[in-house]
Image 1 (cartoon, each protein chain N blue to C red):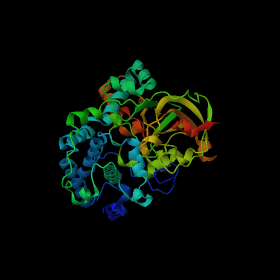
Image 2: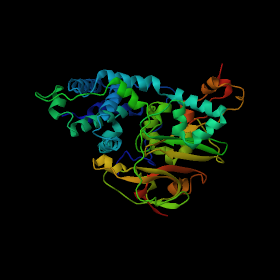
Image 3: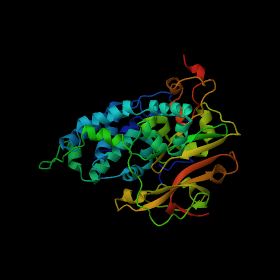
Image 4: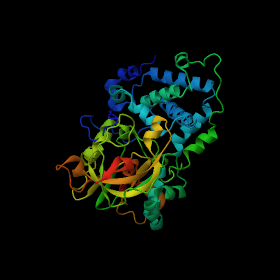
Length: 215
Length: 219
């Protein structure tokens, strides 16, 4: 009988960064499970490779950044994006099986923050798989009760005059933040603008990078 | 169920393990688990809520100690066992049981990629007319089901306002228990931060969350 606590116990001291010091025990267990499933004809290893290729290269914040840059430069697109995120993302070729995607806009008076308190819901066609910190107990527990404290801890202080809206995605509806366009970028083209848009800005824990960030 | 996965509002879970950049997977085995999950899920033996319910039933101490993909591995193994895709003997030996039929066809690479890059239709046939409309005052019911729910503890009993009707959706408890899916209207509900957390928080702030029709009562 497998004892699931064992592997985790071995690196319990490291649970804050649970990606390190992974015991080889887990790797071996995964390998054994995969071989069994392959031998039974339940999975094709080439399909697993294709899935990993999608997760590692096809989806990711570069997709979301392109969407944001388009919205910053094309008012009609921005309107469609805020009206029906799923459809506007599909226009640029981004779709996925997990549900509809709603885009929420940061303004001078509203700052949006995305979380999934119950698990790890995340708009992966546009942001890829969520980072470890987004899935952590610390973030999931505190983002709803103390969003300003969380933002401060991550280096972003939001004025008390600005409304903080937390979006707890829990029902096959996923959220992405449309960050504010940085000052001084009026003459920038889409590809340069996209380079200013980070994963963190689209989760809502940071602003887009300033214009000076570009070489 | 009131387990540790429902952690919205908890204290004491430490600093956020932030990293500005990190690889998509931190070890090769993590990527294999993620891919196995997607490939086996495509066989249609369980749905997303069944997966969630599997993880929620992990003992709380183990849930908190395990890394994200360790939780996935555990849920995947348990689901495969429960669905009869593999047997305990096969899991222990790593080899197919003598005489066990090979199950085919497996998901092809083309199908796998297509599954990940197309929108799935989440809408369900409309149930009886929606009980609530945008602008309605509502209260999240004080429900404590011992099985799967998407009604987190921190909103139970709290008053909010319906902002949108997202349309009819499959009700999560059905899928997680393997019973026939029913549909309910799903609403976006806004709760003021003060209603949830008291007077100490900024009166401007709010939490938005989607809640199913049966989670709500008139406010």
